[in-house]
Image 1 (spheres, one colour):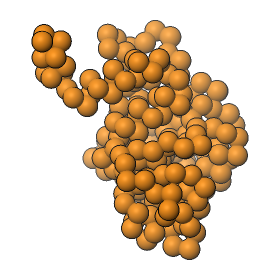
Image 2 (cartoon, helix red, strand yellow):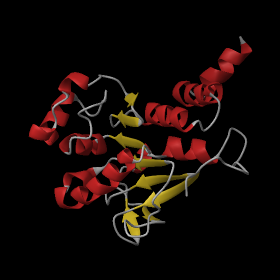
Image 3 (cartoon, one colour):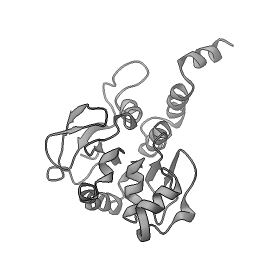
Image 4 (tube, helix red, strand yellow):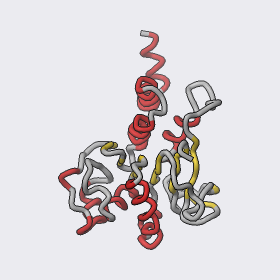
Length: 206
C-alpha cells in the first residue's frame, strides 16, 4: 500500500524513537485523524511479536515474506538489535529495494550506523551517533566521512538519518518529506514538542 509507513523493528528496538513520527501521522492536536494521509505499520524480519529494549512487545503487521512491494516510507528504528550483525544483515535487501524504488528511508541511532556498515550513506549528507561510530561500524564500507553533518537529523536524497537523541528532528524531516501536513503545521508540531506546553502557553499570553 503506497500510503503505509513501515517501521522496521528488530528485537531490543528503542521504542521512544518512533513515537513522535507515528503520533503525528495518526493524530492531530485535537484527536485521532479520521482520514490520515498515511497508516503506520510494523515490519519485522519474521512473523510474531518484537520486544523493545524497555520490555514492551508489539505484534508485527508484516514480516519480510509478507511485506508489500510498494509503500510510502521505510523507517529503521534504532536499538540494540542492530548490534547482532547476523540479524541486522537480513535487512540489507529490504533497504536496497526501498532506495532503488525511490521510497523514503529513515534510519536513527544504531540503524544509521547499520546504514554506514553497508555503504548506504556513501553518496548522501548524513548524521548518526557521531562520525567515529559510523567509521567503527562501517569499516572499509563507509567512505563518506566528509558527508557527515553534526546535526540531530539530516535529510538528503530521500534518506533521513538521526542520532539517538534526534527523534523529534527525525520526525520533522520525515513529515516534511512525506508532505504529511503543511510545512507550517509540521513546524508547529515540532515547536510544541520541542519547547513544551507551558512555554507555548506563556508565549501566547504575552
